[in-house]
Image (cartoon, rainbow, N blue to C red; front, side):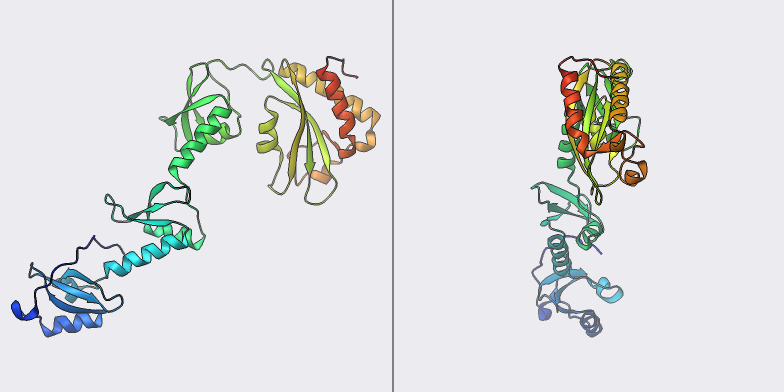
Length: 309
């Protein structure tokens, strides 16, 4: 329960003003307090907390008809919750009585509800700093060739508004910008005509031999990080990429390379059941021992040599 900010009053001695009713004092004692005097507003009394020893004022009707809380003890619990959550207490949020202000490990000050801080301290959720999140989203946009403008106007909170390098503005899902799977509606071209790359990737599964994948993609880095691997336990490395003028040409070259590899090394093709629980593909996977030969093929392709069929 939250409490209003409290200024410790200057109590009026009991013998200098209206006396304290005995049943008020008894009720205060039963609730963990002692009435030490009257406030200048005689409708309020000064309570001394039997737990922390500090004073605060309350209306006498709260003492007799409700359960008063010591604001000093409450703030102490808020500070303890903040410390348990790895945060530094900065005081109450003046605009929302259900919130406090906290300094996060990143150094930024955030406002959060007290109950949320309890859940963070218990490990059931985590704190996300808005300032750091905005910086992260802006960096992701720059990597993909866009500029973050702000919240989306037509979509929900999973979208943001961006400006492409060509000047076109567009609302895009955060997950698509993060994985760089975006296309500009102002200047974008179809995948078949857009520049592409042929790549070689190496994968290390939690149990089993290493393997490599030969393929093509508009963005091999995004394909590796966001599309192929099923879990963080899988190790993935982009070994080599070769730029190709169009997606259509990349597809043609990749198919020729696969035909040549399967014809020359049929035993190096890894069965789908070996990796189906780890990689989101059904073919184009070879034993890692074939990596040197595939790298030679890619080097030759980069030098302009024809791909064997």
